[in-house]
Image 1 (tube, rainbow, N blue to C red):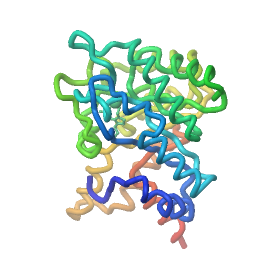
Image 2 (image 1 turned 180 degrees about the vertical axis):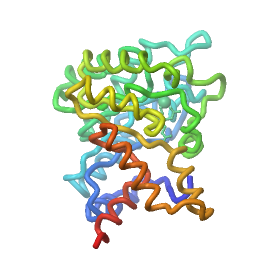
Image 3 (image 1 turned 90 degrees about the vertical axis):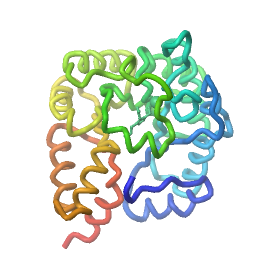
Image 4 (image 1 turned 30 degrees about the horizontal axis):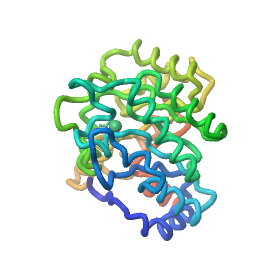
Length: 277
Ligand code: PBG
Ligand code: ZN
């Protein structure tokens, strides 16, 4: 991805301080498995990369809100977001493992866990696992409306998490189905989600606006890797002005109803806010 790097745990002490100085309030942490196997066991290792990263960030910048992605795809040898049984992803076996991942992250000090595997019931399973481990205060940001989208391509390359067979349409949502998206959000609310998320952002503005009317919860929108890369490359080619394009798209996401925006442009936005006359 143009302009985006992956970091080692050792880089995070100076980086976290720098981000805080730049005015960022929160980070979303993704890990890449040190080992990959059929079950994704490295995802819930107590000393895994994400728990190590969370500890390093919290030590360096205690006020930065740390959100962690909870999924198995960067840890499974087949690249699917869950455990594969008889050629398909096994929903409940995956949910049970997602609960362990969330507890490992919470134990390391994560403030918010963000389940992105799109298993049915994952928010409820994760909430129950957190509660019984004594982490009632850890919030859940649910990737409620996560479409089976072509715009995750650059991220999968960066995270080495593309599925080795098939695709994710069995568990991610059909981008053309709006009512199903709202039903997923209803379900996440009933299961105890603290924040609802839609992604990709610009292809989900209608859902964001409808969710804004329907739920009194904080709403997040994730401007994903493909949305970022399109703007970045168009700007690099001189086709659009980057800063204006970023302001316009993030402004539209905000207008549609997002309280929180996850974006690869976060540091740029913070920088331009500081240099504003
Ligand atoms: C993993 C995950 C993905 C993204 C966030 N978490 C990829 C996928 O579902 O294939 C996409 C992020 C991005 O494109 O920026 N479940
Ligand atoms: Zn996944």
